[in-house]
Image 1 (cartoon, rainbow, N blue to C red):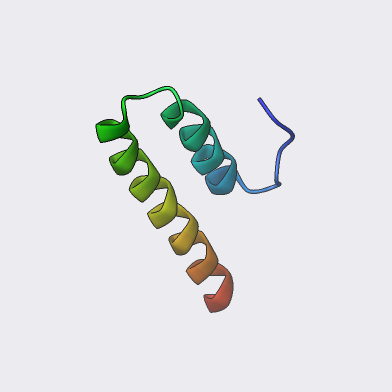
Image 2: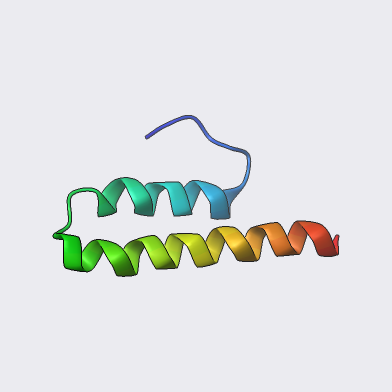
Length: 49
């Protein structure tokens, strides 16, 4: 695992991206979309704080 970003959600999204790299291309799309959604939600929550 890489160094922590300080955000559990961001760390989890980065972990999902690393795991997606070994998936078949058809499955990578869903994994990338899920990570993107999690990162967007995290950024949105920062704006709300």
